[in-house]
Each structure stands twice: as C-alpha cells, then as structure tokens.
Length: 133
Length: 104
Image (cartoon, rainbow over all chains, first blue to last red; front, side, top):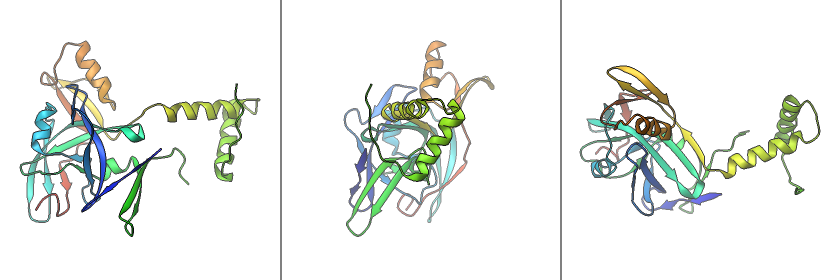
C-alpha cells in the first residue's frame, strides 16, 4: 500500500482535510494536493478560505516565523485523511492572511514514510510500520 | 482456516517469537494470533494523532481525547456546538517556523 507523490515545483501529496467537529471536509469531492514542506515545523497550513469552508472555530493564536517577517495566525483542531494509505491523522492547522498553499509540515510527515527520488522527480509515501529497525 | 507461508526477516521473526512467548507462554497458535491481530489492525483504517484535545467549559476541563471523533461525539451527546466550548490543543505551540515559500 504505497502512494506516488506528485512532483511539480516540490513534492505534493493528495489529502482530504476534515473537521470532525463540524462534519465538513475539503474538498467536498476528491482530494487536494498538499505541499510537503520539511521547513515547516507544525502540522498543516491552509489558506483562509479553506479555514472558513471547514467551519473551523480557532482555538488560539500563534506566531509564524518566516525569513522575512513574523505573522499572526489562527490555530484549530484538524484532521487529514490520506485515502490511498487508509490513514487518518488528527492534528492542528494554522491559517494566516496571505496563506496561499496547503502545506504539510514536519509533524504530519512524522506519521509517514517518505522516499524521495530527486534524480527522477519521483517520490512515494507509505504508512509507518509498527516495527522500525 | 487458511495456512500461509510468509517470509520474515530474522529480526522481525525474533520479535514475533519473543512476543508470542511473552503473551502466550509458548502455547500453540500464539504466533498465528499475533499475526492475525496485526493484519486486522493494518487492514482497518489506521487512526493517528499528534495532539491531545481538551474541551473546556467556563475554564473547567469536561472532556479530553486524542481522537477528534470522540470530541465530536462528546459535543453531540451534550448538545453543544464547537462555539459553545473552548477546545484546547496540547501540546500548545505558540511559534512555528516556516520556510521562505510559506512566508514571503
């Protein structure tokens, strides 16, 4: 059970973003490609419009520290579903003014086994196995 | 009942035998039981969490879980909307680092 990553200007993984507290999901049908970003140390970033569509009630504010500046963000509980891997992960998502992409950070990646082949612009994702050597 | 022949690495086989001995004391069928449990767990949808969610009403913790389905069920059972409560996410991070692509 593996999933091929999509490569464009980065590695992307198809996910469904779900808010079990409002029973809403995004997208309503199919999946959205999330950029795999090891430079983000959180779980998930979504643009503000997705935050609204999911009817999310923010739990708190947090600061996002980038190269250029610091931004205020809103943080809330969230679930990602990676259907092809039969995997559900509960975490939290942040949004801020100007967020344009769905970004999967290092906390979400910690539940995945990723193999990136930079030479061939290919990559695969799998669920973590119970016994790691 | 089916009989399967599978190949395991020495390392995994050793762990499997140790676990079977620990749980079933070397009785017959112990390994099969563990393999069956593991396969069922794998084939079922796997649910993970990286956070603990705590539901607060008037500053008092009324429920907590690592599973958002359980939080949703609690709210539904008590006729509460997510706006009636405060859901605290733990561990709470107040700062995140994001590379140049996210914050330009």
